[in-house]
Amino acid sequence: MTQTYAHGPDPRGMFGRFGGQFVAETLMPLINDLAAEYEAAKNDPAFLEELAYFQRDFIGRPSPLYFAERLTEHFGGAKIFFKREELNHTGAHKINNCIGQILLAKRMGKKRIIAETGAGMHGVASATVAARFGMECVVYMGTTDIDRQQANVFRMRLLGAKIVPVTAGTGTLKDAMNEALRDWVTNVDTTFYLIGTAAGPHPYPAMVRDFQAVIGRETRAQMLEKEGRLPDSLVACIGGGSNAIGLFHEFLDDSSVGIVGVEAAGHGVDTGKHASSMAGGTPGVLHGNRTFLLQDADGQITDAHSVSAGLDYPGVGPEHAWLHDVGRVEYVPITDHEALEAFHTCCRLEGIIPALETAHALAEAFKRAPNLPKDHLMVINLSGRGDKDMQTVMHHMQEKLEKH
Image 1 (cartoon, rainbow, N blue to C red):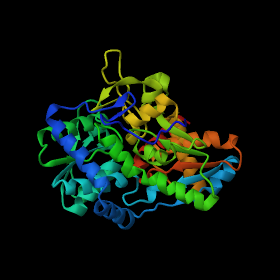
Image 2: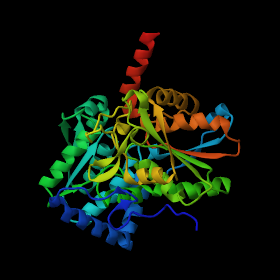
Image 3: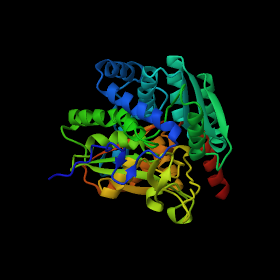
């Protein structure tokens, strides 16, 4: 029998040995209500019609599948395509999930939205949909990320969101998510927690995946239209993993399609300064689910590092952990240096400034493309645009100039 992968989780929210609902008892009724409401919404034509309307007229879907002709010529191998998620309203894939969840919040009668953010793109998307639907929005963001993503902080404030700086830990995404969960426990009756990635307690990993799966469905249709067949490989960056699972899910049961997820190796997996939870982590529980984590021998979460704020997280979504376990998806690490080099190559050859998160996927694709035949069709998920990363890139370019 052919192995199938595009299913799950099971009724307990498990993908194999990963996933679940490891949350405070006070949250369980709310979690169960959310799961039931989502199941009902998925089968409600009115909800699906409203979602399709906002995907088309608010987000701007479908996003183009773009043939990167100059990069293809430069590397001399695979035919490279970009799925242009950075052209969505707010500049990244995050809005796909946010519009779905805000419609659920409205359906459940919630008036207050909380969110966590690292690179700020999910915070901006959350603030955007909250403004559109007239809801209060509180965004938790680590002070380290506030410092390196000031443009996105200003955008969130313009949209009416309240930013709560998080000083605990390293002041990054993990710490912001901790504080958001604390808020949720305290305000369960009025508040909807709009989680930004395919992680957290069930039903979030599957729900976020389903809202992001529009990426893969469009890619399939667009590639069939352009080339008359499916792509040969897919490449996407992985933090929590929502942009990646959004592209991958549609193709998991197509055995001819190779799938590659790219983690942030920071200064190198062997240095301890990285965010590659599958290359350098072990299974454990964090933020309501069991998955691969960066942790010490006592199970204490260790600090993650990446030049990219959006990948600077010590875990990964449980479905990715399972896909790694069963071998359907290949997960590889890319260093800060490799990502920055790919960032510049994309800028100069295609006139597209990618997010530093996306640059990790580009770096791995650029390694592979020259060694593949010219008829190999490769799709890279261009998950976000790089406006938000100018400060970081300028800092690294200045450091490079000083060294030389």
